[in-house]
Length: 236
Image 1 (cartoon, one colour):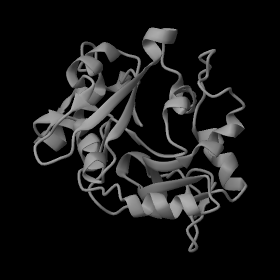
Image 2: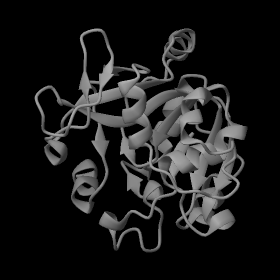
Image 3: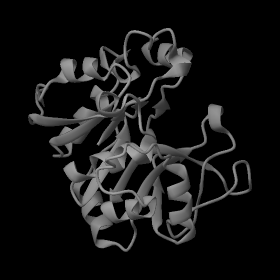
């Protein structure tokens, strides 16, 4: 699942007429980079959630994406903007899409640039066989988030630590594996028929406190394309 429903307020005016995941990075839409990386790993059934200017995303990619040297990708959409008139936040959007997703699935934000990340089938298989309900890829804290998001134990458990506290040395890359069971804590019916907006971070922190979230550090190139300045740096 690719998250592409947000408004991209900090990117205005660039996002006034174009959804942020379609902004060009190094010659192609930003979200095409994770889509291609998923295809490279053999994950050719991809779902995109949309809200702000979502029709432009579905119009651009259509029902299939076919890049040279990669397998054909079959695309589905969860049109939160059409169905509810707004985005449902990250967890609400994922729960909305659950009926279309496998028991174990990848999630990545469509506005994160990590061109060399490997979506490995072996990683999914290891996670599926584990007792965890979520597995996160973390990055060293970037300049725009020096206080960090989470800690990571030597055993690979992601830790719910206060921002800026000792050990809170990692930022969530947005790239993760989940089991459908993780979202039972949302207490929403699969498909989220009422369109309840729900944030992901509180669910993650609660699951961390239960010892259900594993993780690892990703040291490759990674940018949260959250401002026009960061976009310009990538294209410079």
